Length: 439
Ligand SMILES: Cc1cc2nc3c(=O)[nH]c(=O)nc-3n(C[C@H](O)[C@H](O)[C@H](O)COP(=O)(O)OP(=O)(O)OC[C@H]3O[C@@H](n4cnc5c(N)ncnc54)[C@H](O)[C@@H]3O)c2cc1C
Image (cartoon, rainbow, N blue to C red):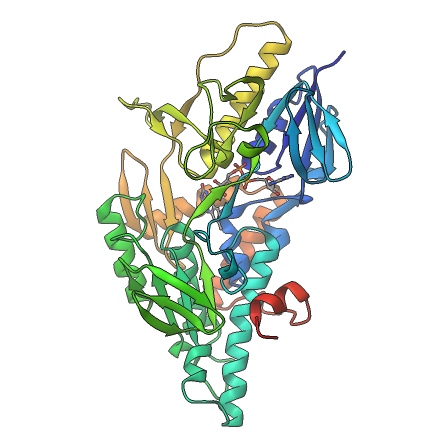
């Protein structure tokens, strides 16, 4: 019988595993609770109105439509019975011979899940829509209050204060883009408020922003953020979030819009298998990325805690193995690697050497034309780093049409300093939930 392979999750890891199994003698089922593959690195551009969702996402079904050995299923996995070799879906069970878990992460509210509704994190297209609506509505409310002249004292300032919690890549990207949006794209749209007076505040509990980058690059990013008007607070621990704003370092900061990017936890895949996990819930896997005690189950990407040797872009090997970072490249390479392990196993061939990581470095964008780049063998900031960022991100976008659209949109935004996607719905219940928790 043809072996049945189930992949849970059509993100960077799962999709690349599926593609790499294209000619393998297996029956493949890719299950995802969403019907699309999302290019997350550009999600902040949807949240800030530069791009629309369909420019950075593609339906899994159509991406894999030419691959004859794969079946795409829109469903949610709720558990696994490893002794019976079945995954539990919402309504039924599905048997497997090999299972790849690539279910990604969720935002971590450090035991305060009640903050989630006041401070959404940016994870899916829905989140991006909600956040864009929340940002634009804050400007609308401030305008309405200013024009009616009936705002309570400090209320317009509260509407125009945006608090971003967490200064990792996502927080820095959001803060810089929001600052430019308020000072450029929205600058001429309002009559009673000055959007440029918006306060964009970025809070980070660690001593510096972009903690995974070398210190001199995080300092450059900090200076650039400040030049854009972002107020950056480091060693600033947020201890409370509610509908009025946040409490940080014992001080209340009134803010109508709070956005979360402070920490992540793995999906519950580790609990489904009762597998060993690290403190963020990632499954600690063997060198061939299988789950200990489950030879035919593999965990990859943000679901897995993987320690591996690395080589950089110019081929230099690291002396010590390192823990794989929670970014797209490891997920892509791990997906391809487990596909190779499975292919060899079903063909009765020798197992490949343990997984090693081709480390292409880290990039973070800080505004329209500035980025920081740590390519390991070279580290730089500014417009050249932005060119590298733009080239890499356009190259990895799914589909030619998307690449073309994104290039055109960027060109338009660059020349006109405007944003295309500025419509939002105030009617969607999920959005209302985030926008006005009191409503
Ligand atoms: C806003 C944002 C910006 C980022 N920017 C960058 C960047 O610039 N560069 C970079 O390299 N990395 C970036 N990352 C990180 C990168 O996106 C992740 O490391 C990468 O997506 C991990 O791939 P993955 O396959 O493990 O998981 P994901 O890509 O997260 O995919 C997980 C998939 O599993 C599905 N799923 C989850 N649970 C279930 C279930 N129970 N049943 C069915 N399906 C399920 C989800 O719907 C999703 O499609 C960013 C992440 C975010 C959130």
